[in-house]
Length: 340
Ligand code: DON
Image (cartoon, rainbow, N blue to C red; front, side):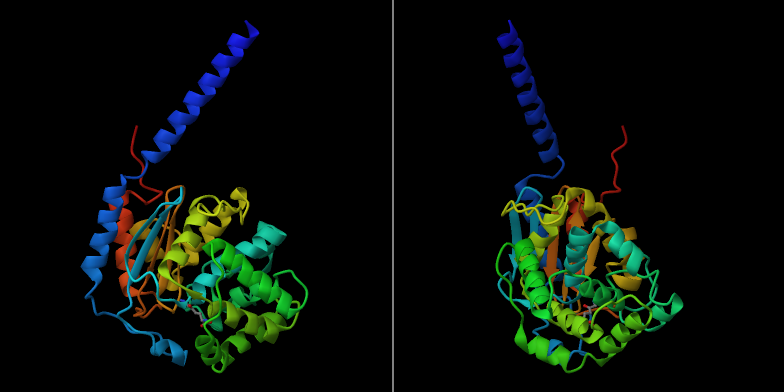
């Protein structure tokens, strides 16, 4: 009798799991629809000629403005793609999300909250005014001063050890070994006096404990890491999948800490245009001046587009349009609720 009850229990749990996985899969359209949405966004914006490459870092001005790649990875690890998935660009500010994730993973969600804060600044990403407004507090880890302070919080001993652990952490997110694009690093290191000034101000206000210029150099390296559209999509999908890389199966952030990361992306990921972006898409996202944008539809997918020409706020023109269209076609907006 006991055995029969046990068998029935196991069967019930099995059916419940099957039902749960079916209802989860039903949340996204089928593979054909997903690929069609990706293909359409590729085609619709391929010839769009708006925006311009960033040029305040000289090497970025030389990147091919026609480069255009889209990758979407579902939270269960399926890849959809269009365009150039091979060419690497520098990750730039998208790196800030993953250094924030590293610090949160090492020191907890309060570490970021208590140091530079988690509020949008309403200013450009390298604003000195944003520091002066609140003496380096009440900002966030996705603007340059907050990001350099975040890099300074990474554990690991000397600068080399800290850098190695950051690069390995990014590589785990991407699921392959990443490396620095040396021409970008040299170009940015030769012209990053403004970031050095931001870091020194953050040090003066007590937000950086160690050597502010060393933190700036590590930050410059992290911004110069080369990524293609697939790398970025896998990184985004890892966040969409609660901190576990859906392809390698490696857990990189505790699932309970992912909402805080996504919250900062939602409020500050596209800088002073973050509100407009959230209004249109509802997606936590992050842009970089290398031309990449990642966006996360929690529990569903991570999507990435690379296209170097930027709008005046520093966000890729094609990437914003392509991601918004793809997500809207797939029901990616987490605030979009089907009434009972
Ligand atoms: O520090 C900088 O200015 C660059 N390494 C990164 C800026 C960036 O990507 C801003 N993104 N939209």
